[in-house]
Amino acid sequence: MSLPDYSHETLALSQGARLVAGVDEAGRGPLAGPVTAAAVILDPANIPPGLNDSKQLTARRREELADWIMAQCDWSVAHVDVAEIDALNIYHASHAAMCRAIAGLRQRPCLVLVDGNRLPRDLSCPGQAIVKGDARCLTIAAASIVAKVLRDRIMVDLAQQHPGYGWEANAGYPTPAHKRALLDLGVTPHHRRSFAPVHNILCKATLVSL
Image (tube, rainbow, N blue to C red; front, side):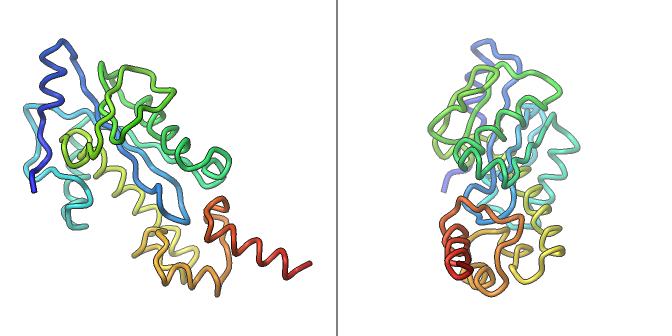
């Protein structure tokens, strides 16, 4: 399997871009917790070896790379909470998180490389959507790592407040154990009420109470 490279960034820089950022999100699929986006600007002269799509890395290697990126690079992260996810829907909430992450960078990028097939509507600078960008583009891969690691840390903290759902291991994704816990323990304030498995449980609870 081929590794992500710096070709998209190199092309943009050769065409006059001074700073190229990558942005990616983590947490579109979970039933609980925020959706998190990270934006990163890499220094082309200082790219760590082994940088890859966060899904292709071990948890330990993700942590190591995230710590390196956050120490060495211009980066920013944004979280959109469950209330806003339920109000906007997860697609628009993901794009809102991306836009906020980009806005939080110390430097304004000339171009943003976005993981996916569509650019956020409110993007504040020129962008290019790249399908499977986290597996193809080093700057997006870096953003995917930071987003995943920082969101996972939030879910570990929330798991201590709400034991039994396994968030420290499943990060809020709809594993069989998480769905069983929803039935047994009920819905927490950190569950996304607009997502079908949660919504259906709330509907059943309402019918029972009538």
